Amino acid sequence: MSTTDSNRRIILTPTEVNELYSLPRLSQPQREQYFSLSVAEWDEVNQLEQLKSRLYLILQAVLFKPKPIDKCSTFT
Image (tube, rainbow, N blue to C red):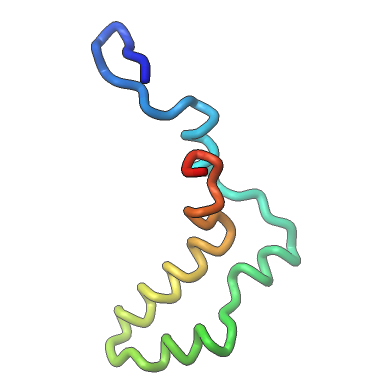
């Protein structure tokens, strides 16, 4: 870890920040794969009663498909 002039700690390099927080660049086949749900995922969604819970689960499912947390080089 290094510090800046303002004594703030820098934990991640600019490359790591970009890798974690930038939008993924997806081709059309990747978009179709990542933004659709499998039968098992739909089964999980359909077990929830509230619409907001269903929507939240769907958003979380598609959010982490293109950039799974455990696949980022920062954590390996």
